[in-house]
Image (cartoon, rainbow, N blue to C red; front, side, top):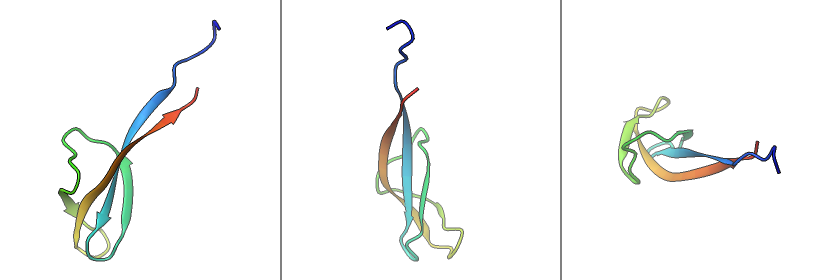
Length: 60
């Protein structure tokens, strides 16, 4: 198996607005903590809360 490559795992953060329910997925940033407020929602000015942090494996 000379040509085999190790799979790469990419971490993502899912944010949800507590007012309108908008859900955004972005790459994980250092310091992300579950259930903490992050920024204001772009559609309703409510607060985005980190709802989930997970990883996806990419096969090469």
